[in-house]
Image (cartoon, rainbow, N blue to C red):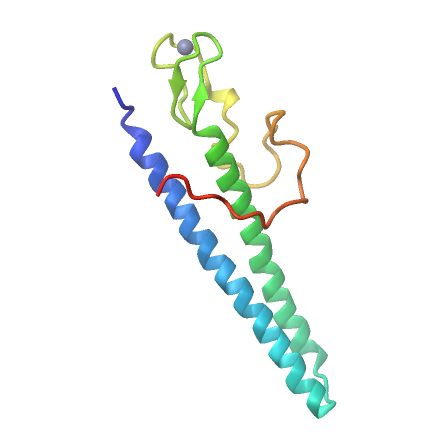
Length: 142
Ligand SMILES: [Zn+2]
């Protein structure tokens, strides 16, 4: 019996992955742009600070979004193989009740798209807030 929302889950995950790749590309591109722009200004010895600052802000914005997507992806991947605390039956991510014994699972799955750090993180995901953000995620589901 495969739960019907398994496909939806992996669709959500691959959508996140696509977004991550997109953002990673943009971040690299913006880095290049910023470098090139700085170079152009440097060789002319003429710096337009507001132009650089605007570019940097754009880069920072994308970078922050990328970090958020990475965080969500980690949550998805670590939470996708949950088990019921009462009967140990496996459940899909985002399941509200255990399909086998009916135990409420909802408060145990904070991955239900927490926008900022408001969700009480499970003990496993708590400490590394802003450390290893750029860690590449190993694609196991391909
Ligand atoms: Zn159960």
